[in-house]
Image (spheres, rainbow, N blue to C red):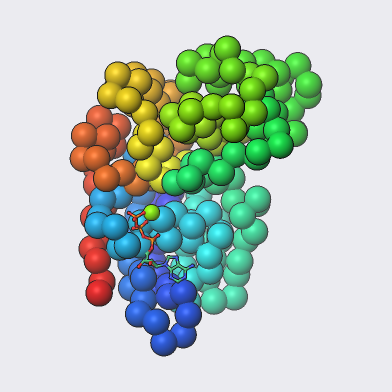
Length: 215
Ligand SMILES: Nc1ncnc2c1ncn2[C@@H]1O[C@H](COP(=O)(O)OP(=O)(O)OP(=O)(O)O)[C@@H](O)[C@H]1O
Ligand SMILES: [Mg+2]
């Protein structure tokens, strides 16, 4: 039984422009970790944004965990989708500390659980000493790790990651990759990961979805 089902999705940014995504279909089983590989401009980020509900397809439908989230008549709002997303540019809240950024998605938990979860995430991503810092006081790789921690903390049913390791040095990348794979497997989170680095995909993913340039 498919956990994620994408059927004949077509998307273009404006009428008259070529389709960025043209009749794309694929399925994922629960807990599967799928890599997305494709040239720059081929629509990888757009695909993640469609799943997250940040863009609306022109046609086609998406089902997550048996629930229809988008078709011609249906649109489930992003915050109702149980989707976690790590953006290509990290997109942390600049006016919040690292700890506050991570706790942002945990408003349903009580204060002590929220604190505990945040500390767990900081530990997992080797960021314990940075809890009180603001994003502008962090390096690119540190911001990337906070973005990962923030997306993982609420235990989304599906995690979408857009180049989540691009700013990490080789050592840190190897560590975070293997820890991430471990935590995804342990929590049975279904995950789509975009990367330009086939080694990332080899290290974490169960299989690859290739998207090709359309123009
Ligand atoms: N807001 C926008 N308006 C019009 N065209 C856009 C917009 N955002 C992206 N595009 C175009 O849509 C195509 C797909 O963009 P997308 O960001 O999904 O590519 P990508 O595969 O993630 O590329 P990269 O590997 O460089 O991140 C590109 O040709 C891009 O120029
Ligand atoms: Mg992109």
